Length: 96
Image 1 (cartoon, rainbow, N blue to C red):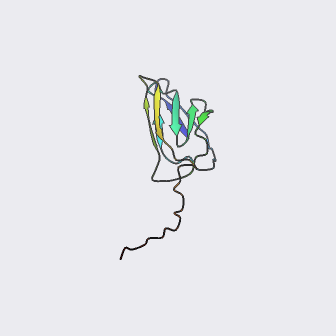
Image 2 (cartoon, one colour):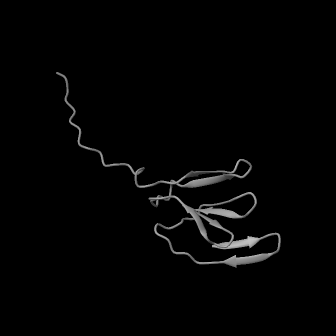
Image 3 (cartoon, rainbow, N blue to C red):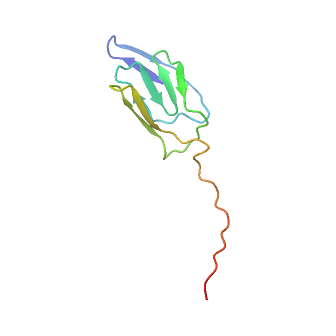
């Protein structure tokens, strides 16, 4: 992860390994103090301050956006309960 502070020109970085992977979905708060990366929220010191529990990695279903004015984070993060369950066999009878 990289963090650039535009006010003082500082640049910081850190490496994290997570399971599942965080993926490359990044949303930054309006004041720049927090970033949502994948399923986890980080502050400017790279501390994980929140995470979505029981998440699963689906590359085509994930996204988030900050509403900094109302202090709301909108997110679509799949979890184990969301995964489609296998279909049970169904018997179809025809009318004669």
